Length: 387
Ligand code: F3S
Image 1: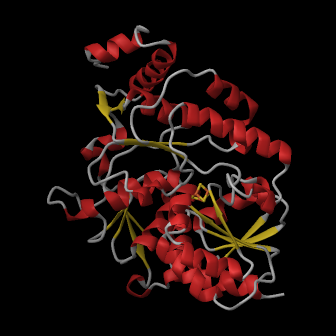
Image 2: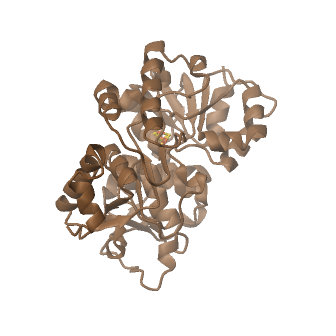
């Protein structure tokens, strides 16, 4: 892989041992994937931020690093809200360890935004090269924004953040971004708004890591978010296209005829929804958008929840939408920033959790040890209001 003279100096340790190690990670990755060179990135999003996922060895690794990031960099959700973690039953020992992880990342210059929706922070644009690691964020950046990122692991995203570059392979290269399989959704002209997570869940489990092109649906931005997050969880889809909606399908060079085609049937979608009871409800996977918070505040206005109801959101979005947040909190529901359904131990005490997200539906059984039920956001609110 070609390295310029500055890259070579970093690799020989001229700028310190940490930068040298980080360059070694990028070079090793580049060699595995036959990258020709390193390309500059405009931002990084680093996973491995919850103590639940990185544990004491991850923390020790972070504490041994001695350099700062050189591009805007944020974290994936951590294991608890930084403020008010005591209100959601986080064990003190976990909180102490999580705070050590936060401090370790702060020392490296990472901005304390802990979210899987960094695209709401205005740090990326069409055509930008990124090193993001959370699967749903990667999917949204590639597909909805038209930025370019592979799905990085925590260490490779951090290495890219400290070097300001990433190996040029995979989804950074336009010709690798063409659709590989067409997806037609039965009744696609008339899809219920809340079915997009389920459609994503089914599509991801059928296409694996291929790049799908949806041919007959017209989702909104929030529905694209739900669709992509679920495909990234039940499969490994890091980029998808929706004909006439996502930006790259409008390019004259876009190839519209994938070699394969599948159909998602209405009966498969309906089969994912059922009437069984739950002991908690959680929405905001990926973290809620301002519009989703507004909708929740309308649905909960003047009402009182009877079951634990958790709503996850980025701190920046929570801060700029306080009027919706206070209306929601008056109902007894908890609006929680920084963390999420699956990376916080707060949800581990429940046995059956209702969600409105295809991604959470895929992850809750393994990550929280609970059964998952999926419904629309309206159904989630009704369930939370029921005794
Ligand atoms: Fe985000 Fe956690 Fe869901 S990281 S996408 S809220 S599983």
